[in-house]
Image (cartoon, rainbow, N blue to C red; front, side, top):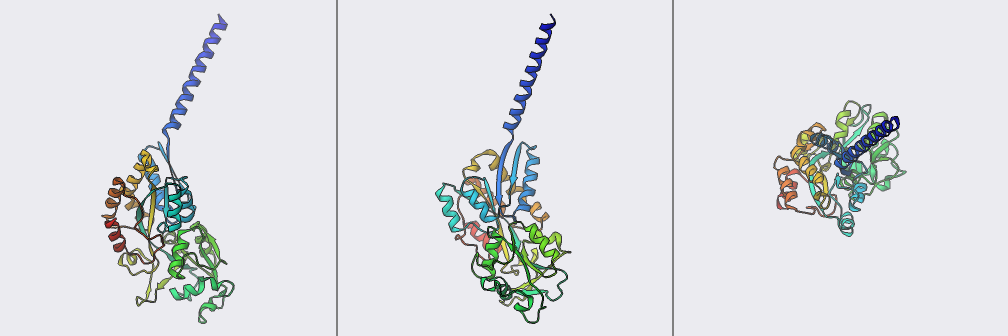
Length: 338
């Protein structure tokens, strides 16, 4: 009799274990994923959108957001490894070709505008403004090993070491900055502290009295008390213009204002969770963009992108190059025609 009771008890335990296991498998099956990688510039916005989206889905959809840099993100995206790729510049010709080879078609979705910021230590009292011409002297390949002190750029500047901090080669910020300043994308001296993680650059600029670096405005703004943003003179009659969202909107902060994007795979967008995420982003991004100190696009931009996405309009409105000086108005004209 006792043996029968024990056997019955074991059967009940086994049944309970099977039920719990089934529930666990079911819970795993219900947790869907959206994989995102790419630009560290876009990361603060996309991370905020991902958090809000997951809350709206009661955490039944998991969104991962990486920071491989724009170029690194597109490599994964074009191999079909991610659903969405963040870009701090438009997709380039070579990347478009890579996507074609693997059959990855995409939606190009403008998200916000950034004021790429040139910053120095707040202890640097010698500079308040820097020209694009002087930035070129500092960052062009010919400067490597030669322009090593501030006075090498301008004799009136301090005779102190020049310590440089900038984006790594896989970063869209690197592509855009070199195009805007040097005149050719990816053309840069190599003897500087480079990283695709903008937080590393922020720490370097803050902690080095001889620093000069370039970072997205969203990484500068929270640290404004610990570093100094320089006004920039493009040399085209506008004079020295400070990086600010107002100056980006006015079209006066040139050539370092730029649009930010995310790209969604057509194949991945057939999955309900990816489609829902894209739609959520385009409907809810504006307050989150403001929160991280970027500039939202005009109100009409987001419904326009949403309509194109839902109609299945694929491709890019750019020529496969990191174009410099694209204004908000210009971007909207292109988007309207797309």
